[in-house]
Each structure stands twice: as structure tokens, then as C-alpha cells.
Image (cartoon, rainbow, N blue to C red; front, top):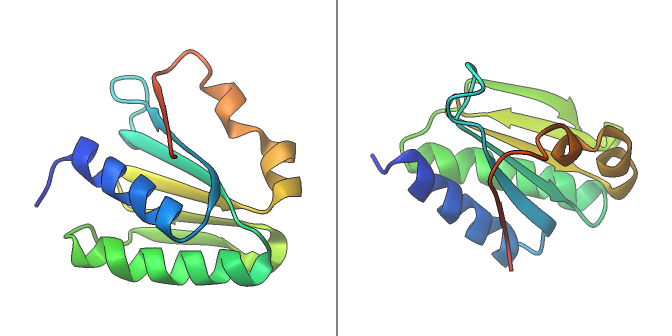
Length: 114
């Protein structure tokens, strides 16, 4: 199994390849007891969100990280995939702006996609 930093970078690259927008990784190691990394991205539309969530769930599982929980739906504009040490938030534009998760972690190290 690859380490948490590597999986985060691989998932960010994967999201870029799948045309997710505004991909951002937040390192919360040592300050969050639930996870080590939070990834956030914006999908182009509900169909894109659904496809991203399904593909990510399968792809990350193949890398050795089984899905612990899935919340939300593409129809709601927000899907959360919890892989234990990595949590991925997939948003539509409106929900991304509304929740503004990156603002909550503004003092943490951030990596962005291309």
C-alpha cells in the first residue's frame, strides 16, 4: 500500500485528468483525529459529480484504500467519499461556495491541482 501523501497526490492527479475543477488537498495530519487529508473539487454538473464519485470509489479501492462511508448524492450537489485517511468532497459550484470547506482549514498546508 502506498503512503497517505502519495495517495493524495495520485487522487489529485486523477481528478485533474477527469476534468474536476479547483482541485485542492488539505493536510490535516495532527489536527484532525478522523483523517489525514481532505480533498475538495468541483464537478462541472450533476452527471459529472456522479461519474467522478463512482470512478473514484472504484479506483481508490484498487489502490488499497477501501471506502469506509459515502454520503450525499450528485443530485444534492455534494458527495463525500471517506477512505479513512483520505476524505474527498465532490461539489457542484453552488455547494462548494456555500460550504467553503477550504475556509475552515485556511491555516493548514494546501496543495492544488493543475
